[in-house]
Image 1 (cartoon, helix red, strand yellow):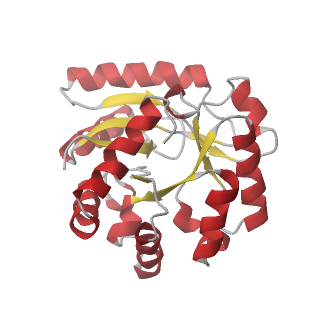
Image 2: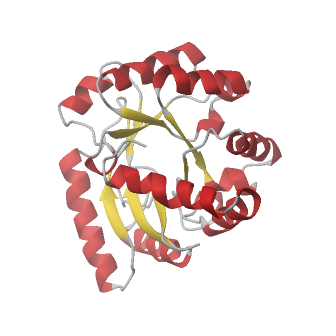
Length: 243
C-alpha cells in the first residue's frame, strides 16, 4: 500500500522526547516517505506537569520543518496536533484553543497512565465527548484496565463514542508477544480505527515505520480493511468529518 497517513508522531524537533534535532526530524521524515507514508499529523506531548510547546509554536515549527522537507525533496505533508495527557479541565482548554486537536479538527488524541482506572478513563473521555469533540484513545494496547477484557473495551467505545488507536510496532511484535497478541485481538474484534507509528526516533520500535504493519493487515484482514484504517479513517480527521 502507498499513501499511508500517520496520525500520531513525535517528529517535530526539540519540543518533547521525540526528535532531538532538526536533522533527526528530517531523517524521520525521509524514513516515513520510504515507508509509503504520505501525510503525518505531528503530535508533541501536552502535559500539565511540564513546559510544553504552545499551539502557535507547533504551527510555526511545523511550517519551518515543512519548508526544510521541501528543500530536501521529502514528499510528506505535515499537519499540527497534540498528544494530550488527560487532566481536569481539558475540554475547556480545547475550547479555548490552548491545546491542539488533530489537524484543527474535532478529533483529539488523548493518553492516560498505563494502569489508570477504567472508570476514570471512561468518565474523562465521556466529558471530552460531551463538549462535541471526538476523542481518540492513544495506544490503547497499553491500558491494562481497558484491554484485560474485551467487553470492557467494547463498553468504553459504546459509553463514550471514542475511537481506538494502536501502534504499528505493537502489531508487528516489537513490543513483545503479549502486546502483539492483545493488539491483534483488538483488530480482529473490529475495535481499532487507527494504526499509527507513535514515532520518537529514526530507528527501533519507536521509528516512523508502518509499511510492514499495513502489509500484514492487508494480508490477514483484506485490502478494504487496510485502506480504511490507514487511509480513509485518517482522511476523515483531515476533513474534520465524523466517521
